[in-house]
Each structure stands twice: as C-alpha cells, then as structure tokens.
Image 1 (cartoon, rainbow, N blue to C red):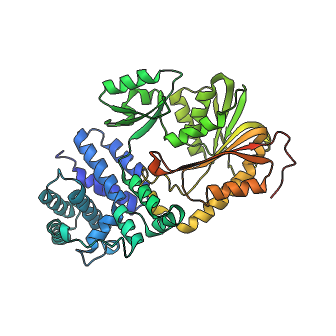
Image 2 (cartoon, rainbow, N blue to C red):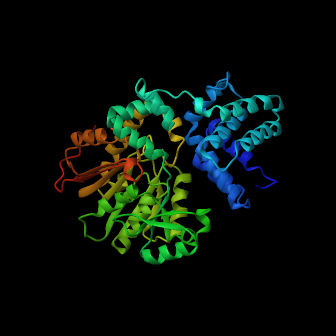
Image 3 (cartoon, rainbow, N blue to C red):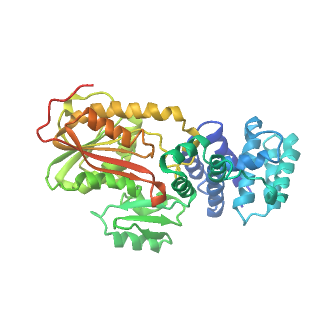
Length: 445
C-alpha cells in the first residue's frame, strides 16, 4: 500500500465523519475517494470496502468488541472505536489480510493519532478477538429472534421488530440478507443516443462487467469500475445511475397514454433521475418541470440535465407543501416521489438504519399527506398522480394511499406496487392514481 498515505487512516477518517460528525456514509466515502483519486486502485478499493463494510456491520462488530472489552464502544474515544471496529471487520471479513497485520496496523494508527497510551488496549482487544473468534457467544435465534437477527444482520432491534410484524419473520430475514448482499450499480442508458448493445460493448471493452436487467433492455448492472466519472458514457450523459424500481415510475405513468404535448410536473425531483427519465421517454411529445425545495437541490438537477443533454426539462425552486396556483389543474402527470424514512435503500445507503428513528416515520407520513393534499390540485381531470417512496413501511406507503383515496374520491387507484429488497432491487413503493375526467369540486382538508 502507499507509503505516503495510509489507507487505514483514511478509513478511520471516514468512520469519524459518519459516526461522530453525522455525515452520510455514501457522501463521506465518495468525498474521500475523490480527494485521494491519485492513490493506487488497490488502496482505493481497500478504503471503500473496509469503510463501507465497517459501517454496514457496525452492530455485529460492536457486539463482538463488547465481549472482549470492559469499555463499551459508546464510552471509547471516537478514534479508538473507529480503529477497533475497522480492525474487527478486517479480521472477520477480509481473509486476504493476516490477523497480525490487522493488529499491528491498528496499534500504529493509535500511536499516530496521538493515543499512544491506548496502544496496549487496542492490541489486547484485537489479538484476543483474533485468538478466540470461535468462542464468541452469539444470541440465540430461538430464545430471542429479534436480538439474534439484529446482531447477525447489523440492524437496529426496533427495525427488526417492525419488519417481523409487517412481513413475518421468514420474509424479514430474506430482506435483511438482501441488504447485506453485494450491490452492483444499476444504470440506465439513453437509448435515443446509443443502442443498449453499443453501450454494453463499449463498457465491456474497458473491462467493466455488464449484466442485463430482465425485461428492461436499456438497463444494466455494472461492476469492476473504479470511479463513475472516469466512464465516458457516464460523463457524457449516456448513462444515468438509477435503480430498476425507480425507473418504473416514469414507465408506469406513461403506460396506456399515447397523447402528445404532455406536461409532467415532478414536485420533489432532486437529483433529477425520474424527471430526466420521463423527459427522455417523452422526447418531443411533452415537457417536464422538475422542482425541489432549495436552490442547492435544484442546481443538482440542472447539472444532471446539462450532463444528459435533455432539452425538454425545466426547473424551479418550489416547496411542494406550499400551493402554487400557476399550475392548478395544469399537469397531465404529477410525480410525487416524497421525502421518506428511506428504509428500502439501506443496502446502498447503509447508515440510514442508524439515523432512522421510529417516531420520525409518523412525522414523515404526515408530511407526505400534507404534500399530497397540495399537489393533487395540479392534476388535470383525467390526469395521473404518481406517488412513490424509497421505503417499505405501511404508514408511508399503503396506508397513505388508502387515506388519500378516501379523502379525495375524485381519484381512483390504477396500480399499486411494493418492491421489496429481496426481489433484486431497492425497496420502493409506487401508487398510480387517476383523477376522474369529470372531477367533482376539490375537497379541502
């Protein structure tokens, strides 16, 4: 590994940014890899795997540490906690790294971080774990299935309990396993510019592994690349990173519609994936307006519009919870992909499970209802409202749709889909609702 920059030190910095400073893990990892882009690919791969793996397996790692340390991790200095957690991850999940190297490097890290007095503590805990890994006492699935699943799959107990109640224990275990499975990057090709075959061959020629997505020829799973912005097809907008379940929003919205000059309004659009997909599918047959709450978020959309070369897509800063009379009954399709708990995308944004709180789910469900009660007014008679989230809780999904249909009977449910993570995609929810052509007077709530 590089002599100038210690990759293990970068891992510790990422863990501190996430656990101590509250930064989102995918942002912390991407920022560090961008900053040290000049490092050898092997070093960058090490940083990515160990930092992401340590965050993903944190509950399990802490459970192990607690059996060999009298000091609980939440009482440790943040640097020591990060060193130990990343060290235990390497001991259990990286066979290519010798136990002695894990222990020695962790001790050196403690010294270089000004914690020389704790070097013997770090050394003792890690070497004791390495020698006695077969003697670890794991919780019993028979006696306490919630705790056992929590430790095995590194999922907070309240989430495990909620999943067990909603999906049953067996299906929940499949979902928890799916979150920990290796996640390939799902990309969508702009088939207006290049055929899927051309894109696939171009990627494979660069040594990138490309796998097809069943029933969706324009989509691929890709692996074996170093950085997305080093792939020309991504930089020039031919490729866009988007999960299969998310792609279905635009596809389902347009299903059964052949009319032209459609106006589509996306009310919570950042970073713009669904808006861009819709604009590409429409082409000259319509225009899309992508909105979001802040100038920062809308600027993200604009950057992706420029990269993807989409001309029938405009942007606006607008709070979706605030009524805008300028688009009253103006939209053929309204896309409402609303803020949610994000429990469906834990597999790709692993720290969501640690930041989520049970009481926030009801707060988010109420926010979603408030926004839906506003944006439904933008739908034309005969138009479509697409409600979606990237979570799998009933309160934010099926229950909200049922509430909406009862509150606003001028809408009817055309299709409802709940995608679960064990189906090969992110956890995602979509409800397609149609406004009656001869709509009754809007009902105020």
